[in-house]
Amino acid sequence: MSGGLSDFGLRLSVLSSVGLLAISSWVSAAEPASNNPSPASPFLRLRETSLGYHGPEGDFTNLTEIRIGWFGPHDATNPLGADAWWAANLAVQEANAQSSDFGLRTSGFHRLPFRLVPRWAVDPWGSGVSQLARMVYDEQPLALLGSVDSASTHLAEQVVAKANLPLVSPIATDKSVTLAGVSWMFSCAPADDAIARVLAADILATLPDRTNKLAVLSCTDHESRMAAREVLKELSRRGHPPDFRFEAPNGARAIAAQMAALAEARPRAVVIIAGAEDAARLVSAVRDQVPSALLFGGHALGRARFGELAGRAAEGVRFPRLFVPHPGDAVTARFLDRFVAEHQRPPDYTAALTYDATRLLLAAIRHAGPNRARIRESLAQLSPWPGIAGPICFDGTGQNTRTNVCMGTLRHAAVVPPASKASLNQTLQEATPL
Image 1 (cartoon, rainbow, N blue to C red):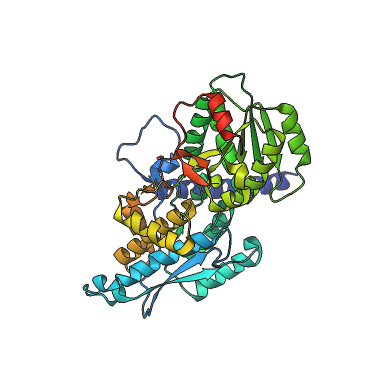
Image 2: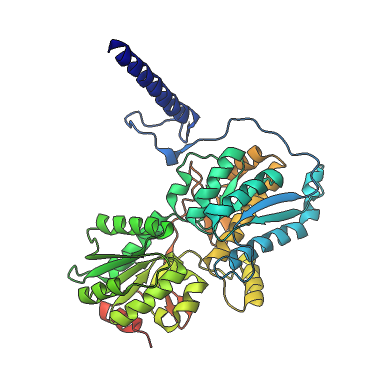
């Protein structure tokens, strides 16, 4: 009996030592952002620290081109990924056209052309991740761009953590993406909590009377759940949690039960948190069941795909805008001209954010040379960096701290600023589809 207890105690001691070693390694790797951290705080404030990278590093040699991995759709007809792929290629083309300027330096590396190496699969968690892993080790890119959503970005993060490869995410808004302690991860989009603050403020400014019932309808995919969690948290923090909460399965068509419950609840406003295609389906269904309700949505309603599918049902819907063009800026104007000439419509935020993320990564590679660790350092050092969609300023985890998000309203298939100080009756009347 005593021998068994002793053996158990030994195993417990070993496990405790391993746990303490992991914690101490995490803390020792974190470098305080300030030289005078508050001695009163017992917590490690991860976003105020920088894990850095302190392992081996080495230059790539005998390169004939600068390869950058792309984990996302690379089909020009893909309804959700084509714009991002186009924007990344535009940034690469522009950088290659300017390569002669870098040729004035002594290193031949600056004369090499950039090339995107794409990998993707319909099921990224199945064959997609194996294709990504093979690309990372066979093609030997200096960095990786991706992916099209937060779930796929989490997947790519697991690969780069093993490969010691910088990963720049253009459009993922899930703030937990950079909280895994992977020092190679950078996220250029504003986080869900920053977006939720703007959305919640607009909702409550429109519904100042607590008697106006509010419903939140969201899908169950990872992206929607994480965004909905932040919206619910922000509404509760402001003292106005939703009166009704409904969930719809991702991609499902059978939503009769949710719509019946929503019609019975008769809310004055409905917030829809879902991907572009699911949001279009839900907006159309809500218009049929509760035609007088004011509709708000998450930032995914700013996708061109949403407007295309929702049609007239999208009229008057309000949502956070992640890209507000400033035509007075020469870089923005050139990007807009190229996109409209190619697609005969304005770009949505996915194109603009991807263009920014790619240009930032290219600048970091040019600055650092053929060395993954130095590219990672250069990405951190170039922050804050001015993008056409807004500033990119990384915190210690690699998350963009950008907060300049504003609301927009769909009017006749165009995104316009919402009317200021509109009364609830005015807003409801304007939101009714034609």
